[in-house]
Image (cartoon, rainbow, N blue to C red; front, side, top):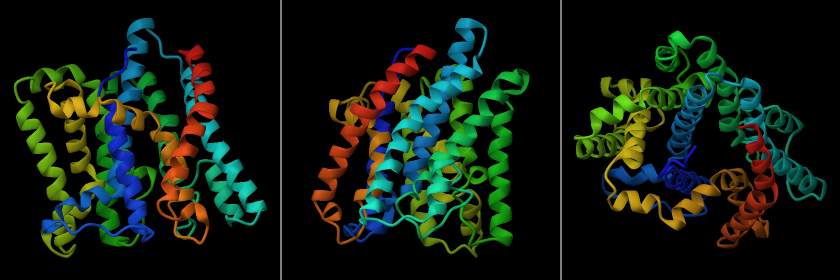
Length: 346
């Protein structure tokens, strides 16, 4: 499969948003004051993660479609081997480093946090007070989704265009119940976030039809997607949840939810298949492409360095330097050898 343009650039923007969010959460930077709070979107980590989810759903489904088209068969065994080789080694290496640092007395991580991280059950056994492995909630959601989706895609071929809509509806209904009965409940779980992955899958399934329809509407696409995302960010901050508009946004998740995920998907298609303008060239620039290439490693290691402690590795600006060095080591020494091995199962 040829490389899909712009995806690494979008990944780069996503990881930058996540990192800025964690800088803000830990009081390591002051969030700039923007007019009408529109631009606090760039400090919303949940939004950044959802961009990853949408891209992931689109890319995985595209690969499944191409495999089926080329071989008339989807090899689930090879799919899970590839997935394991892509995700597990770098993450488990991080956990080993955590454990060694704990033995040396630099950090403290409860046994349960290690267990939920190691078993990819973080969103099930989430401890909101534990920082270092907290970001594994998104990895566990992705892994659980990909235990299910390829099987559904292969076995229920006749219904594969409908299944993503069912997953999207499931997420919306979950938010309605959460709003009514559990307003303080986390939405960092598979049911709540399945819509982001499913929307990416949906856009992959209908790619040709969507691109054909949008060929003469790219200006409208970029306008509606960008305006929608920024307005969702604004209204999420300014409409109390007891008002009708607030309830509507709460149900659809604001910048973390269904409406935003559709807007992200439209923006993704504009970035890949739209006009080759300044936005396209920015996303495909060497810098953003390289940051996107390192995005998984950056995501794994940013929890260790972007945290407010007395450790030298957490002091500005050294924490960013250490993060970059750790991500480079992870990518070139840990990930790349397994990526080469993964290619044998394509």
